[in-house]
Length: 300
Image (cartoon, rainbow, N blue to C red; front, side, top):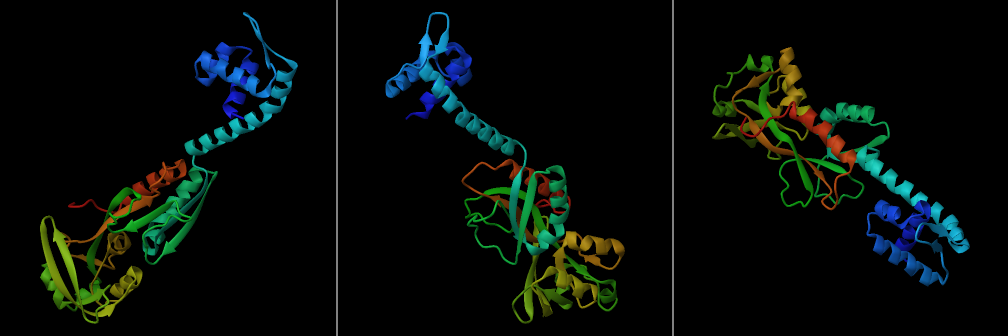
């Protein structure tokens, strides 16, 4: 059975007109008539009484219309619900992102998202390290760094930038650096796996300096490094969004303000194989506005 023939018959029966039914379905009148005749041949009965002025139902046609209308109406309602979901964010949005990024940015973004879209819900997975996405159970994956070999759709959220920071108490004991090379004389708090040495690459416009850092402290968490810097244990390169409140409060000093450490792009990755649904587009707009307010453009 060709469902399109049933749809054609129901449209003609509802409108009592081949012309109006063809207009509603967006198909030529001759095509519509051919589908109805084909259905009658399949069933071996006449469904419509045709005259030059009107179209009526036979008893068989009336019985078929009674049985076919309800399923078609349910399908139409289901299609409209899907279209409405695509227009207005709804359903669960599933996100994965690095822990520091998630703790720093997601609370306010998710709050605005849920306030704005009452039919939406959110599931967040914070991870230590992100491997290439399989997209199992995910809609959005936020990644810091380049990932050009992924087929995922990319939305740029800005550039992850670190600056060098120390506490006023620590700077009272050492010489405040005037050039990147001066950092090598200070106590570094680093993210390196090496026991005592790390290399930071600082940039100012087109100028680049590589500095070997002497380190007695190595950590794998930015908030832990921040705590050690606040305690006066040395200098660390840290995200600006994490340190700006402490700089404003006078408990941190940003060193070498014209120089910065570029970590990499911040990107939101979404499924490569489908158009983004409304819930993803709406979330990315809110996230992009929040992140761009505290990140920097490359070369800025």
